[in-house]
Image (tube, rainbow, N blue to C red; front, top):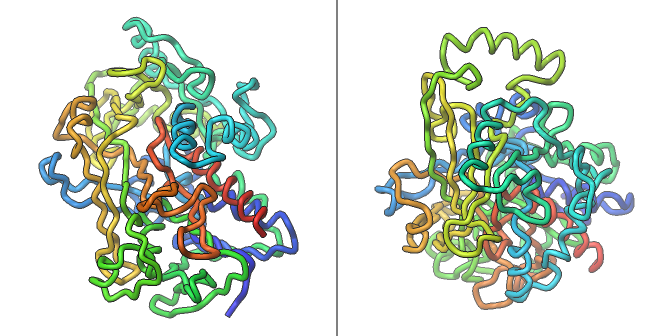
Length: 495
């Protein structure tokens, strides 16, 4: 049995940051375990490859929710990254931090150290912003943030249309104010995706004290005497074989809002009755595990129009496709360097005009079901996303088999106030931002404390989107990296 100081389960946005920070000390032995393959696919590194990654299964868990009563019992597709970089390797690369008040709300709910002023220095330290350098932005950090190299002209028309409707132009959604319409910045560098694996894991890969295991599924956290002492996993190429890794300091779960609660329950940490129904011995009754699931529900407005600027599934688009293939591989420009969602808006439809409750993503193409359904012709798509849903759902085990997908029930539109904010529609979809299932707090249903330690179990932490008490107002990738940064600081301080 191999032994390490720290075992990190999941090489996603937070896990890559943790692996980097914890292995900076050469005397500290770190093991990072990822269930998926290395991030070598060209689809990952070519920005427009995101359209293929949404459908492709090798780098994507490809979950589906339980039937949603408010959406005519449809099962909504829920992709999650399954490779080095996690969802930062398959997402749309939009760099958004959320609203400042979101973090102040976390702190006010009894989580010291998580206010906006607490986390802003970490956002800035991570960032190498190619355009912005001010009180809100950093330069010289490992995470490259830039503008889309060659924006589609339709994105500029979308921004102009928003201004004509009276919405202010906002060149920086991560600055002093979030409201308005404008371009998104993206996590790219030189026309390629700049994932958490590129930013944080690649610089650490050569360290002798960092071991990275891919295609290795963790089956459970090993608990002895009320403490996490290691993990049991299936090594690459040997499904069903069980091996053990020992952790002398901590096990840190970074599997995300779906996999982390699933692994806690498989390890005997969760609601005692639920665990017993699957024949799992309960090490610690923690009923909040898997509860408080929140996600951004999203409606799509599709406009068909013949325009030479749109990206289309059509024979008429072939000349541009061939031209842009050449331009991308010679100059890293053209539509293949695009993240598809180049522009957007943050709007208030009810409530505080300074704290938007709706986010728009504009895409210069016809995309149904986020590109999983191919649509012929030219046009554009606008995604309308409710930022702070009141509806809550859950993650539950389907069985005691670690390879079985859990039961994902977001409870979309179960709260009537959500229906008022986001008009009910048959084609509502998730925008893929699940959070909250290992909620941070100090009440009876909280799973981790403000330093991300699992209540009631020693030497075990959770560091990913699952710890968010409430969903932030925006895309969740950058905040997850800050969660990883915080977890590393907590772990090292307590060591």
